[in-house]
Length: 298
Image 1 (cartoon, one colour):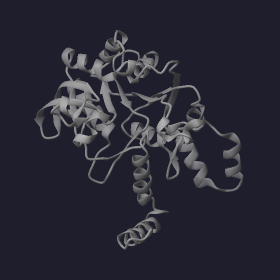
Image 2 (cartoon, helix red, strand yellow; image 1 turned 180 degrees about the horizontal axis):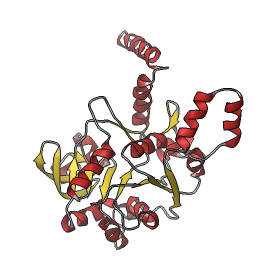
Image 3 (tube, helix red, strand yellow; image 1 turned 90 degrees about the vertical axis):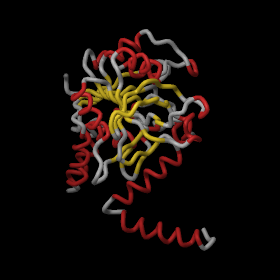
């Protein structure tokens, strides 16, 4: 049973929900407080012990690669100006992990994006973190990717995170049919990509964190397009369930869909409240705004 040292982060989407902002700026580079979305995703992977991070990028995503590269002019200016705290922050970003970028030449779905990472993943097990989903630890919760990695290392069975959703949100997600083994830990029996609420009794959704045995790559090699003419990851996960099994785990970490406008705004507010430079002032502003709204004013 090998440790998980590699992760794939699909980041090739067009970000159409954020147009016109994403016409020239990758969705993953939109800022949450003072760092882009992709930073929080990579940081989660690093804290889980990931050493090699494979970015699956599309055309026009050079800004993501540049963000994790050296900026000689900027760093020289910060050093000369004595802004060492900012210089250290940039250096930490650059040295977080081995960042490897692969171009997904055709937008053929999430399954195809993951298969694109095969030349780097090789025969190893690996994690997948969707590039617009943010999960953050709280004092009482663990790192979601780390929990999945430890589960795989203990069981040698692929593991995914799941969360409960309301009926109205079922059709937004891949949905897992499960059997509970113990509180918070399940065996997956089937999966469906974005079903109607009437098409499944399950309300366990996939929020974009996975750890896979390399067998998933073999399945993806022969996968056929299905929903929307794309190679869906959930189709191959169904085969993985039958072939080698698939576990699922709930989590207590905060989770934000930063690829959605409301989720993006919620992430900015909550993470800004955590920020020692902004938290107190923002909290005061929110309380004042709440009082005005309750009084019928804006």
